[in-house]
Length: 225
Image 1 (cartoon, rainbow, N blue to C red):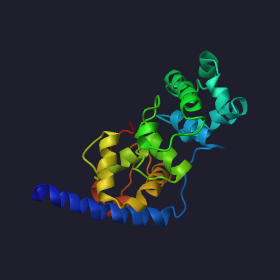
Image 2: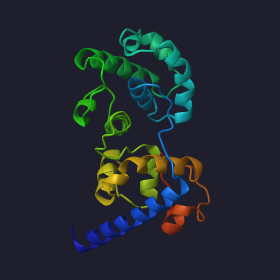
Image 3: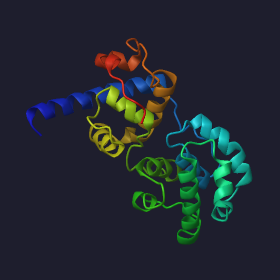
């Protein structure tokens, strides 16, 4: 790391600590917005939430979870019928295939229990690091990384916490500058901030709390995907 890179790194470390402090003030209590009643249902909701709002996922799963109540229900489900059940969700065909395939693997290979490691989870169909981080954190209290969803990606770029647009690289950058004890809640607080204060569409955000920490953010706009 040369002097210029080190300067940027140190500035980002200082900035993210200020951001975390402000996020804690704004959202002292934070949690996942998806509705679920068991560990398998959590995994289903997180898979469904990719490129889809949590609000829409919660609407769809309200009836979905009444129809499919156990892991066995998913493992035995008909693909076409399941596609129809989630067709309001973006990328529903791919997600349907991945969810039903994962249900069979978890039932047969893991005896119905959600795998407990990042490596095992990310080998399942359609499960990336974001989903794995959320599942590990909420099911087992295991924090291995930072879940980079669309809000975290967009706001990390907006507040110059990373140079990358790739979620996996953004995660690595954030892990380098943020204390591990903050990793889990950082995701949910950034999501809260993106939803309630600073949405993706262009708007005047000069007076927003985090923009005051990093004023250039007022003119930095990135798409959610």
